[in-house]
Amino acid sequence: MSELGKLKQELVTAVSELDEEKVLELSETALRAGIEPLELLETVNEGMITVGKLYENKTYFIADLIMAGLIFKEVLGLEAMTKLFYSKMKNKVGKIVLGTVQGDLHDIGKDIFRGLAETNNFEVVDIGVDVPKEAFVKKVREQKPEILGMSGILTYTVDAMKEVVEALKEADLRDQVKVIVGGSHLTSKTCAYIGADAFANDAFDGVKICLQWLNISQGEQ
Image (cartoon, rainbow, N blue to C red; front, side, top):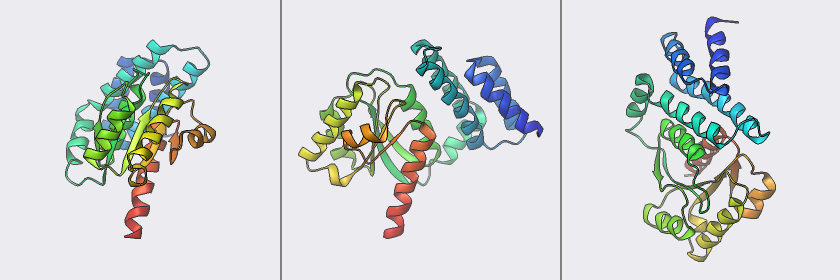
């Protein structure tokens, strides 16, 4: 295995063990060794996926998820990463309205998705957490985004997501926006129940889906 490969493996382990100091040290080392910022984010995200699995099997708790989210933000705040964000500010590929649905105060998954989406040249309008359906509808009407993203860690947020989609239909806005929902508990079955166009259990997958949607629409023009 190459030195960079070993670094990446160590980084995934450090993230999964919530070792903030080591994550930042290894991230800086990897950047100096030539890793691309997006590759670094993908590596850190591998560790985040492990954290999510540990949470699901009750080895980790909400506090651990919050810690993982803070570590991810620290990595995003590294100088090489902020330079990437600023360099990406010029040409936006599309707009996403994003929020955590009503009844859920968690912003970890949402914030990770936002960081990755912005890195991929999306303009993201983040409307926060515990967002009622009326606020989602209002923001979609005002901002006219290509995509609406809804996040929810808690299982009962499925109904809140469904209510937002129904509200979009009532406002005659549903056909004007793609809807993606995110959360580790979501499945194709719950996605169909919600009435969303797609779901993602992982922030990277969610951003990839959004990019695919815009590539398809751009190709048809």
